Length: 288
Image (cartoon, rainbow, N blue to C red):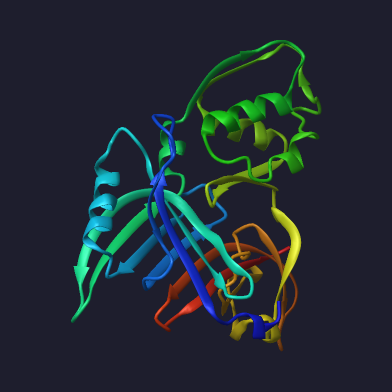
């Protein structure tokens, strides 16, 4: 991506309901008010986290937001999109709202939204289902993923070739019972895969590999800021202009005065302020 294209900020914050107790409905849609955000994500199954500050939100919209979180019958979720004028905004976070806090500056008011992207489904989503002899490993994995309640993500890229102990089906059938995350973990580890939730969807990858094989180039010409800093085990920490495609699990090619090679994003932190402050990503890269 040419650095010249990484200008002209656009953003959008959407809040709505996302569960089975009623139709999905948008509670809040913000794309003009100033916001600040800090999103921390990594390649593990630990919940990714976000704090989103919205400045000068009107009283009615503020009340709607508070009411959405107070309704315990339904799950209030927030989606954060960011990008640039010539490309449009793309999602960098989607998760369940955990807290809302009000604040005040010298002349402005603000509201902070705190959210996590998979804490509830990992903690509570369960499956109890028996599968007949001859059922494919793919069918059981898809059932567990469906019970988990996350988006399918890149499951289709791996599902057809899934095996357990060298077999693509369960000769004696299979009983899936308990937390959907535990069932999914057992099946995918047996197939040599690792998984996590990214932006509300399932992300699979080969152990030690990247989930998204199409590489993103990181160089001074494509938004790399400053010099990469070496970390333990050959890892590298870099900072670059914000690009929504820089998701944990993404393959990148790093080119700088001291580095030239392929890496996978292990950790990503997105920091932005629409009023003209930060608009960048901080990445921890692991060599491939």
